[in-house]
Length: 229
Picture 1: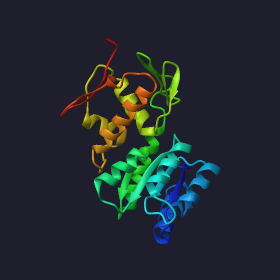
Picture 2: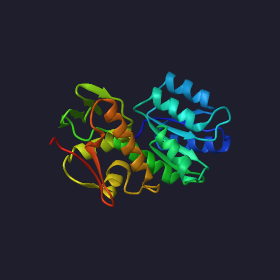
Picture 3: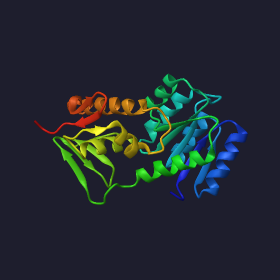
Picture 4: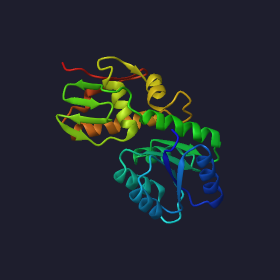
C-alpha cells in the first residue's frame, strides 16, 4: 500500500539505512528510530501504519517495547526483526503484540512482500458488511468488534482471525485456511503463531463475559466458532 507510514526501529546504522532506502523506493513513508524510547516518542507523535521492530535495542528489551507500542497503537501492524532463532522468544514477542516476524538476515524482497500483505489485509474485507454470532458483532468495514455492545480491543491479526472464524460460525476452518487467509499463502514462520492468537482471542472473549469455549479446537484439523445452542 503506497504512502503508508512505516516506523523502523533499528539501532544498526547499516541495516536501518538499507531499510529506509528500500521503503522509500517502494513508495512508503519511512521514519527511523534508533532506540526504544525514541520509537515510543515517534509513534505517539505521528502514529505509523506499520512498525518494523528490532528486538535487540540498546536501551530497552525489544519485547517490552513491543508491548508498549501495542498498548498505544492497537491498530498498527508490528513486524519483529530478530537475530534470535529460538521459537520460545519469537512466541513471547508475538504474545506481546507482534503480528509477524522475520529472522535476520532476511531478503528485502521478502520483507516488502510481507508488508504489502499485512497492509492489504488491513483494508476492509467488505463494505457495509457486519457479522453477528450471539453477543458478538463484527463491523467489518470499520474493523471493530463488540460483545454485548462493549467494544473489544483487538490487534489487527486478532480481528482478522475472529472475522475468519465468526464469518463461518458452525463450520470447521482448517489451520491451513486460517494461515492463508489471515497471514499469507507465502507465510514462512511457524504455525504456532496461530495458536498464540487463538489463545489471546479466547482470553479477550472471556474478559468481555463471553464463553471462551466459543472457539473450539479440532485437533489435527483447525478451529470452529460455535453458533448459539
